[in-house]
Image 1 (cartoon, rainbow, N blue to C red):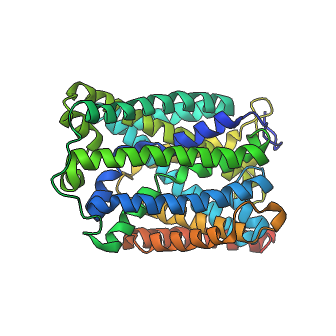
Image 2 (cartoon, rainbow, N blue to C red):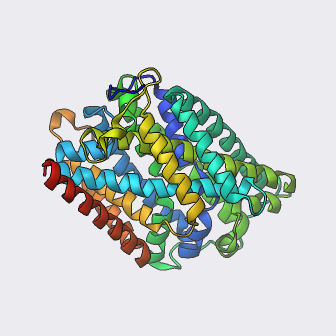
Amino acid sequence: MTSSSALARRLGTVDAVSIGLGSMIGAGVFAAFAPASAAAGAGLLVGLLIAGIVAFCNASSSAQLAAEYPTSGGTYIYGRERLGAWPGFLAGWSFVVGKTASCAAMALTFAAYASPPGWEKPVAVLAVLALASVNLFGVTRTAALTRVIVAFVLLVLAVVVMSAVTGGGLAVPDARPDLFEHGWYGILQSGGLLFFAFAGYARIATMGEEVKDPARTIPRAILIALAATFVVYGVLAMTVLTVLGPERLAASTAPLSDVVVAGGWSWAAPLVRVGAAAAALGALLALIAGIGRTSLAMARNNDLPRWLAAVHPRRQVPQHAEIALAVVVCVLVVSVDLRAAIGFSSFGVLLYYVVANAAAFTQQPAHRRYPRALQVLGVLGCLALVATLLLPAVFGGAAVLVVGIGYRVVLVRRRRLPQ
């Protein structure tokens, strides 16, 4: 039995921070440094700083908006309320479609670490079904499992750093690395690659209808999660660069495993592998929760089929949206290898935050927590990172947008939805 009632407010600050950390400290941290180093060499440290600044601008906008609009949907709702129905739809569509592809990629990433050769896709499907089931049992179960996963992943990352410190891996380099050897374009490319590892703080805002005292809890949780993630990434970036060096890091397929081996802790390499699998599960769990809430918000406004707006009366979860999502992700997992083909997801994330910053820019002084300059910087930062994306990613993202625009044009004509 289902209804379209409101979701229950059951998440406290610790729960919200855990969900944000679970989204950000995901599988990307185990792999993102290698392509970032290939783009910028040691300049990935500058790229990380740029990514952190852009992420802070976006996070402050999301926090400011979430305090005024504490409901499910995140930037989809903010865009509708502040800019109009079309900007809101474009943000919501970009998020749902792009992150659905990311769900499939996270499931496949988990399977690559956790399954025997040849069994990757069946194991990935089982992971999707298992985590979707956790979400269906209620948001408190989601938060509890996320806390466990985050704690384990942070423990694994601590082992990586300790192996470098105590094992002698952190040797002082003979010469100071040139941070700008690859130029500003390479640095911006690395910033673009590393930025998407920060994007999970949006998951806190999309669950705004389930957070206690949202005007206070959501802004605090977003900034705490982002700050903690930036510190973790900064320590790891300096560790892998110092131990492996830019060239070896760029060529590595498992840089954190290489760090523990270089530090003489070869026994910890399997632990790092398990940590990567757990991180992928944590990101997948948070993605399923966030996409379900955005789909719920879009369905309430008829921007997606109304059937998706159903909420379970006892468990207070958008069960139709999450069941539909699980089915779609399973189909993608078994039919397409998405690990190298989801660049348009990056395009969608940046568009999502362009809308968020633009919406925050229009807020009145009574609801403003941060200066408008941060929103302007956020828009410019997102657009600069878009310029570094590969052309297939841009074309793929544009194609997805065209499909979404065509879908809503049909809805507007048939149902006379708001323009």
